[in-house]
Image 1: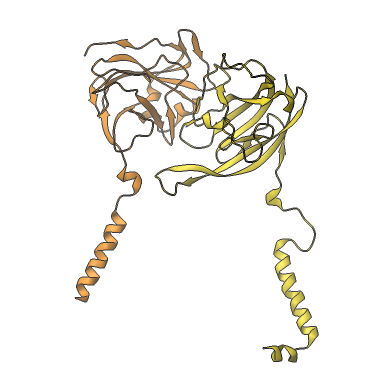
Image 2: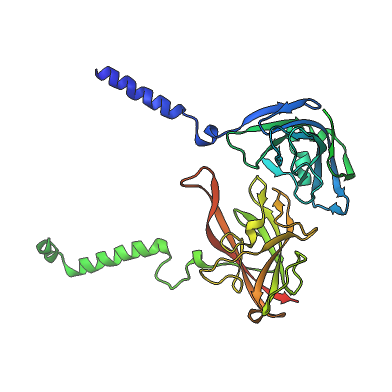
Length: 179
Length: 197
C-alpha cells in the first residue's frame, strides 16, 4: 500500500514537471510555406514570392523615409471562409518586427474569401538587421491577429542577405489574381 | 528579566545601546542628514536620450498650435493643442504599438499641465515623418513621434518653461491572464522645456 502511494506521488511529480507551460498550451499551429507554393491555414491561403530590400519604400502619394531599411515580401493571399485582415510579422534573430502600417498599399488590408490578391508585406527594420547572423533565415509569420493563440500561422523563411539593397522600391495597390 | 537587567551596570547598558545604534546606522550612511538617493530624479537636457527598461527616449520639444495634426479636429473655445516632440526607441525585441504613449496612465512622459494627479488623459500619437496615427515602434529603430494633447489655453503659453518627467516601467507577468505588461511606473529623469508656438 505504501509502495503504491510512493509510486503515485512520484508519478504526480513527473506529470507536474513535464506538463507544458501556459504559452505552449496556447501556442500556434504553424504551416511552413515554400517559395511559389500554396500554403493553407485556417484563415488564409497564401503563396509567398520574391524578397527585396531598399532604403526607401514608395507608394502613390507616399514616400516611406526611414532611418533603417525596408524588407518587402511579395505574396498572394486569399481568405479561406470569410473576409479577414492578415497580420504579418518578421523575425530576424532575437528581434520581431511588425508589418508596416504607414501605408495602406500593402496586404494588411481586408482580403476576401476565395478571391486572391497579389501585393506585398513591408517591414521597416534597422539596417543592422540585415547583418544579423540569423538574417539568412528571416521568418515571416502571418495570421489574422498580431498575437495568435491556438490558431494557425503561415510561416515563410528566406535569406534576406541574399538580395541586393536597392535605393527605392515602388509598390502599388494589391491586384486580384487567379489561382 | 527586570531583575537581571538591574544587575547590569547602567554604563554597560548605555554602551550597548550606542553600539547597536552605530551598527544599524553605519550601513545606512551614518547619522548625517542625507537625501534618499532613490527619490532623486536626475535632470537632463531637452534632446538628451534617457534609456529605461521600456524605452530609450528624448524629449525634443513642446509647442502650442491651433492646428491639430489630424487635419480636422478644431480646438474648443478656451482650448489649444500641446504637442510634444519625442525620439523613441523601444528596448524590447518585439515591435510595439505607440498609441499608449499619449495615455497618461501608460505614457513614458508626464507633463503636469496635461494630467494632474488622479486624472487619466488620452491624446494622439503620430509619426513625425508622414503623420501616421498610432504608429508601430520597431525594435532597434529610433523613431521621431509627436504626441498631441488638448489643454486649456489659460494653463500654458508660448515661452513658458514646463517640466517633463520621463517615466519607466518594468515588464511583469500578468497575474490572472497569460502574457506580460509594463507596470510599476516610476520617474527616471526630468527635463525642462521651453514651449514654442
